[in-house]
Image 1: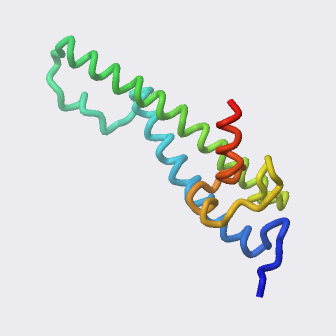
Image 2: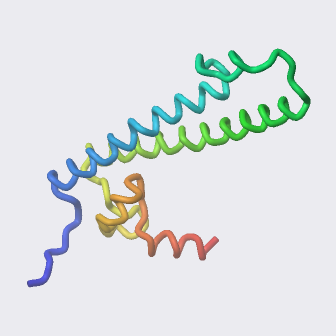
Length: 131
C-alpha cells in the first residue's frame, strides 16, 4: 500500500516536533545564560574567588581568549534559539516541516535531528552548489 502524499504534518506529528523543540529550546537558553555569564564575568562560582591575587600575562591572555570564545559561542547559541523559536511559529502556522525551496515535506528523521531545518538535504545541497 503506497503511502499517501501529504503536504503538511498532522497535528499529532506537529505536537511531537513541538515537544522536541521546546526541550532543545530550554537547554539552549540555559547554555546561552551560562555563556553570557562567562562573558560578563558575573558568575558567582568563578575561580577568581580562590585564585591567587597575582596573575601572569599568559593567564590574562588565556582568560581573554576564553571570554572571546564564549562570546562567539553565545552568539551562535542566540541564533540557534531564534531558529528554534521561528520553528515554533511555523508549527503554529502549520507550515512546519515544509521545505522552503521545494515545498516538499522535510523527512521526520531530519527534523528530529535538526528541528529548525527549513530545507530538505537535497535542496540544501543544490543551494550550496549554486553558490
